[in-house]
Length: 157
Image (cartoon, rainbow, N blue to C red; front, side):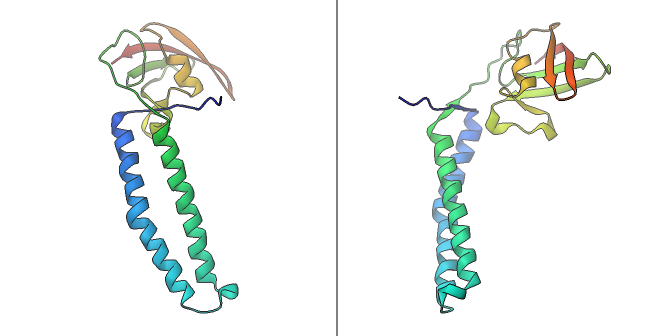
């Protein structure tokens, strides 16, 4: 048997994916079909760049639909707990960079919701893995391209 990857995500993200899939399969698919129909009306398909572009767009659309269906099928809904004694998905963790003395706060999320630009860190990332199940006061070491980084967990909310 094959082992499938589970995609950890919140109920909110799961619902967003379902809504996106509905949009792509209804509205967007009809738009692309209309583009293809219009491009066909221009005549000879062998030298018809509009037709080629519309078919390429259709391929991208079907790939996106397949990707979202896969995410939905193998979604693992993670329920955020109020537990703040150790780091888990949904935790907001304040850490102290022991080399530079700077503090930052990160939210630990599933890989489908990660966005480092707004401090949302995946539990599958090296930093996220280092934080998972750790407690306030723990010092973690994270291997990074620049070397090993050390952080102290100051707070878990």
